[in-house]
Image 1 (cartoon, one colour):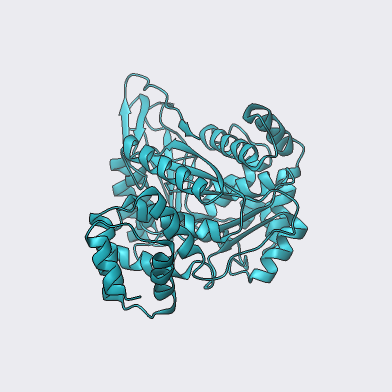
Image 2 (image 1 turned 120 degrees about the vertical axis):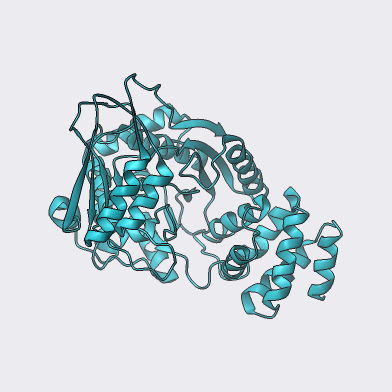
Length: 437
């Protein structure tokens, strides 16, 4: 089998076989196919998109290009969630321990933030000594004992995707929907889960801003996952404004802990999405039949303290101090410099643009533009007011934190452009727009 023949085949709009996709994935993982041929193949796929069947075959080939986690001896259902990313989207931090309280195993493999969207691993690492590079043997042991583990992609899980992902970024083929689907699902399939909940965002802070584009991606993810034998559904969720009140790594961990301790009214939109996501994970895992009943059971786990206890155990298992839960305000100290953004008029907060807000947090030091950029875990934004809230002139709308005066000023200047005010109360928005089954 020769790579040049496979490139030509896809160039000529012909379907590839499972064996051919295996050859490509193994070549990407082992370095036996040069980057220029892989790049040519990706462009051929961009111009002549993979069919649903091809997408499933390519996904499986990439998942099998390295090791695959095996939890078959663990008798609990195994489930996970993937979000296409957004601003303030720290749902995973609360979601994983909450779902694990329901006797469901949650091996959650996550990534880092880049650009205006945050990364789960960065938020976890705002806790000193929290270890996200967990060996496979220890992931298995932790799932057996605790039911949940939050970790980064190991070198052995879907290595073909790691290579092809970097080439897609450099060859202007990122937007190909089948390649997006294969990239996301190859990593999740390699986790060894039985079911998967997709949170597909739309709006200014989302990977895909238009609702219809997000809808098409959600449908493609669900149909491909099912072809792979995974039970799957997708929530299409709103990301035109930031989720919750916290933007930034330590900030978002603090919010998570407060919510799991029972502060349900702290961030109603965050709490709503947390419950809705968790409920559907329980349904697709087979643990519950009805999402409404699942929500009630999940709320009980928060009310009786089981959810925060599970998070406390998770933190301790992965090397950080449980003081992060016991005394979060002391543990998650913000950066030393702060400035308050106040309302210039009476009326309402009409809108807070998620993308501009996320970009402002990067300027403050809470995110990165390149993967090698350092992160300031105390930098970020706390939204004292949200879209739809009434304000009087001089009310604090947000507090911004940074460790450097220039960063603080730059973040404030951009954040000011993200907030719009109105005299009339804006219409409320739904966090969960649609459910794709």
